[in-house]
Length: 154
Image 1: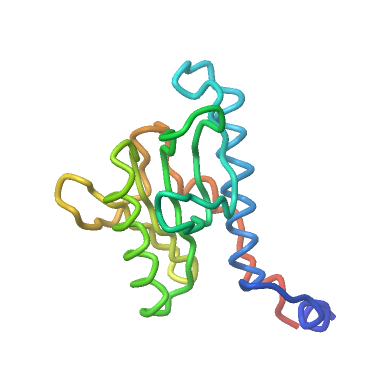
Image 2: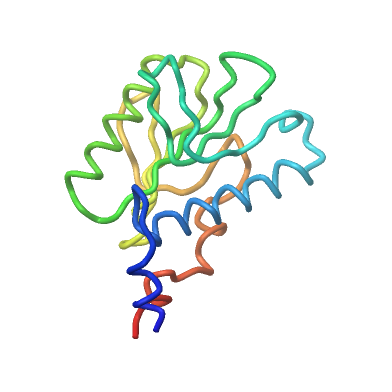
C-alpha cells in the first residue's frame, strides 16, 4: 500500500532525500531557536535556498542570517550513495567555499550509507565527520532516528 502511495508522488528528488532534508531543517532550527548562544540569533535553516554568488546553486540545507548578505554559515548537501551524485555535491561545495569566504562549514550526508563528509577550508578536502564546530553538535544525531527507506517497503 505504501509503495502505491509513493508511486503517485512526484518531484525533483526521491522521497527519502526530502525526508532527510526535512529532519535536518527542523532539528537545526530547533537548535538555533532555543539556544541561548547569541551567535545563533537571527540565523535560520532553510531548504533549497538560492545563493546568487554561487551561480544560483541551491544547497539542500543552508544556515544563514536572512537580514544580511554574506551571512551563509553552513552548506549541507544530501545525496544517495551514487558516485556521480556525490562528486557533483563535492563540486558544488568546493565552488561555494571559493565564492563565499565567510562560509563556516560544508557537509555532505550520504543517506544510503549513513555517512557524513565535512569540507575543510584549510586543506580544501573532505574528511569523514558529522561534527559541526559552528553549531557545537553532531549533525548525525539529527537524522539517526529515521529510516525512510523502510517506510515504502511492502
